[in-house]
Length: 176
Image (cartoon, rainbow, N blue to C red):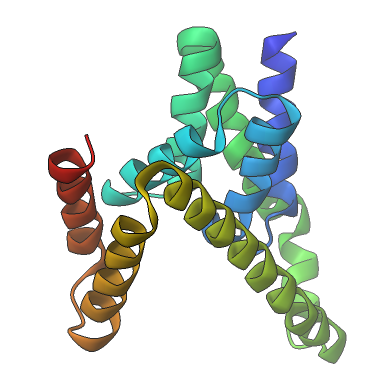
């Protein structure tokens, strides 16, 4: 049963996650945290932070980790397959349709309607992570990390990987 649950959790998340990894992360969170209770919000946010620090697509790293954690190597393989299966299906089955209608005004409208939904889902996920961090680390630690990350990313244009690694080191030294 766990194999079917792993497959469905990642297949559904990734087939509905139009726009790639950032769009599917809130959907994966809903499945693994809220629906199946495989991880807590804190564990999910920590896994996401570590996954973002590593190279490659985030959704496959999350699927591999959660699949392995829940059902070993076979669970990892099933979760990884479920993550890439929607893309494979769309490429194989719908490639001709996509090329035929790629310049259609209706397709462009659909894309414009989906973008705000993805932005809202990402905002809600960030809010949940912030509240979880605030509850665990306190307001001053959380505000320091938020402000420092913002300044490093937006003002100094530091690469996000370095900001993530810096936050991990800060957490290991000051919050452990």
